[in-house]
Length: 369
Ligand code: FAD
Ligand code: GLY
Image (cartoon, rainbow, N blue to C red; front, side, top):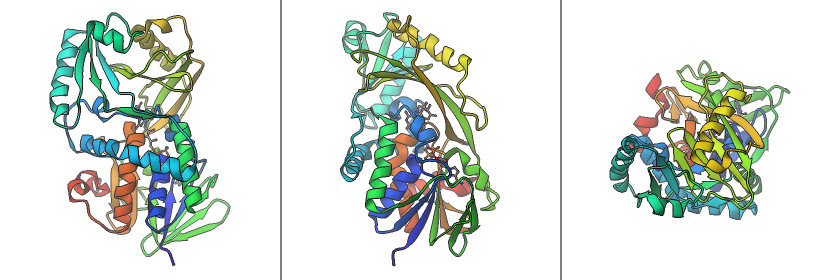
């Protein structure tokens, strides 16, 4: 009989882990309190941008992000192949814009260390910059161009991932409302609000911003907190923006469906996913500064999602302190879409009891206990 793994959470992390477990011969049973992809994963801008998102230096987190970026081309091909569904995956490259000489100095410093880690980036200025992105403001002093960065259309990608899981035989149960973990040390037993029991050999927790709610159950500290990201999209005719464009305030990503996605706030608002006028107006103000053609346009859609932030900014990937039967894969904060392939591989390795010396200390859930 196949070993059965109960996966809690149907965001990009839970679905990616379930897919990988099923491919390795386990029977994955995914339990979702609401609907798959209905939380942070469906709300994301879909950027695969380790160089633009990690500006300080090549720490272990940056290296994990980079490893995942390198897995993406093959990984997304696998999802496309198994699911039979299409989604946008664009190797667009990115431009990180500087308005002033001081910002440019910082970009030059970043480029120095990022070149050591696979970036073939360069600083572009003046006419060259405006040839690359003609709608960009003339006030841009320069930009750091990183060709290696790409993006996917997250809502379609997550849907394809779910379909790939179903086609490979993952058992998916949604709208379970409340789940109680009845047993986790000798086996995994979970009871749903409707009285159904789900039993497995091991438990993999991928419940994103809700992970802290299981701290008492596993007798440990799980410092994962929801940080709301408000984000909006403009409708554009022929897509006028071909690279992902970053600045110190946020980012803009042009999608093939004729939308320009602009994000995002970082709000402490508990589990509230409402958008506020203040939050979206702030985005609009810097958007039109960066792309002046947006001056007289209004976003046609705005939404918000809850990023799973952690106390030290790193995810929790690995077994809980009391047993290797329970593995956590939570706390991916701003980079869960990017980190999903590498997380799936690591989590599946932990389920199989393999060790990852380079990463297990840094990302171990035990580090807070
Ligand atoms: P989620 O997608 O939130 O999934 C967790 C799931 O668990 C939910 O469906 C929830 O209902 C369920 N759940 C909760 N409790 C339980 C329980 N007890 N049992 C079962 N199920 C449970 N990342 C990038 O890499 N690139 C980006 O461009 C990017 N842009 C973003 C933009 C915004 C506005 C936001 C909000 C986030 C962005 N992110 C981005 C971050 C990314 O979305 C998250 O890191 C990622 O989605 C986290 O995935 P997850 O599966 O852990 O969480
Ligand atoms: N990574 C983009 C965001 O979290 O808003």
